[in-house]
Length: 256
Ligand code: NAD
Image (tube, rainbow, N blue to C red; front, side, top):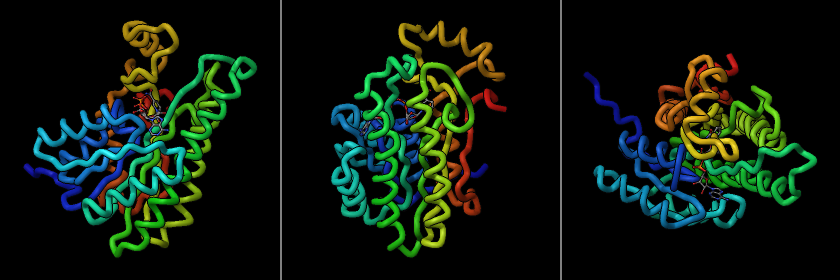
């Protein structure tokens, strides 16, 4: 049996790591030996993620950061380097969903919030991360969290959110081409519905979501945060050394 520690001695920065997919990704990196910087807007959930990692024997640092603020995401990159000595992996996972309404009913503020966090946040993070990683002899790997509802699938009531996520997929491909020569590998993961509160429609219970998924995805259920984390770790690892600019869909076959 081989016990894998693909990230021993490496430092991974995960945004939106106080909950859901981001927390699962942070725990998975720590379990494979990485030092993990967990970034997000609210301190308390980040501290909980750090606590979970430390209690399992790992190393982690919480940094309060709003990904839509360039100075915040730069400070998170700087904290990773100051505290752990390098930035080898970054996962741009922070995101928000303001939906359930047709475009004409979507408040302008919700349009801007989704654009600022989901797309501008990804751009600002990528820029700060690549600028650091390209100075390191070992380069780095970045994984952006898009969504199967971006370029891969359509659904009513979520046009604005879907547009931001399609843009993240496209940004990933372009950035990957721009920076592979710098030694930085950039890819995306596009989950379908995952077992977090974000996949619940307004007023929907978990039982209602499970019923919906029976017909919505060939697999017949939502994906788990651990399944999404496994895809992220693969793309961030040396196992994916020749995988550049891809968008790995994890959605139970919904877009198959
Ligand atoms: P979640 O709400 O648990 O996680 C989102 C995290 O991002 C939260 O911790 C939140 O505090 C953080 N965040 C929001 N705005 C931020 C900001 N400005 N700066 C820093 N952090 C911020 O939901 P999740 O399901 O874990 O979502 C994670 C990612 O996965 C999101 O990008 C989401 O769009 C994407 N996604 C989720 C699903 C799903 O079904 N859950 C499907 C496809 C894609």
